[in-house]
Image 1 (cartoon, rainbow, N blue to C red):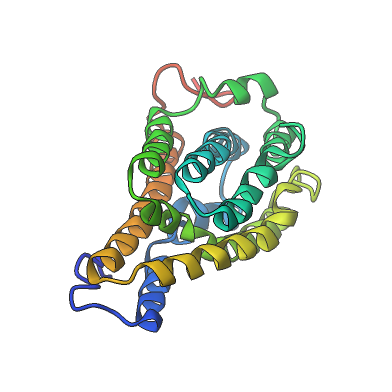
Image 2 (cartoon, rainbow, N blue to C red):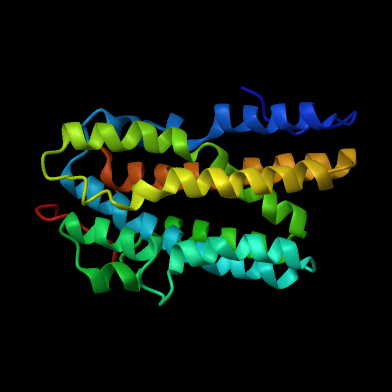
Length: 252
């Protein structure tokens, strides 16, 4: 497995850069993580699924905020017109009719309290740190890097295609209504990742910028991986649940 640190050392053609970016996803996207494999294999307890939904809510909730930071630094009106669709997808027209609300529905359908989920106070420290790092990255790094970090959406249809049918088949308390969040995501992710990829390939026009966008995608893949690492450590066999965080029913 490559670390991709010198992938653009000699400069890449547009096609070569796209190939490297897709290789990053093929090697490092979190559909390769053991927690995901346990999920699709039907091996997670209900408490582990609840913990996943609760912690992932923190990530879902920060997405429109990081996108707003990207918008604030974009000078091109055409870029802003396209990028703001992401915020509309997650917030909806009234703040609670978009993707975040659908994720909250997923969490409550698994038996979690809505206010506890929204408060994020029971999330793992590692989750909160990871989400904060993502917001900071998109706020403080160059616009091109921030856009490139969103390219994990290139691979999200893959993980959704693995996750949804497996969860419906292997967990009798999970229904299509539970997983309604995922109904629109493949289409939205395809639209958004297509725009972001075109932007990155156009503007990463030096070896330095090419390496920066590769590093940004590696960072984002690492972040998503680290979030599942934290879930595995806390709620897997080791059972190292930090104080003050979500504790599944029946777990002391």
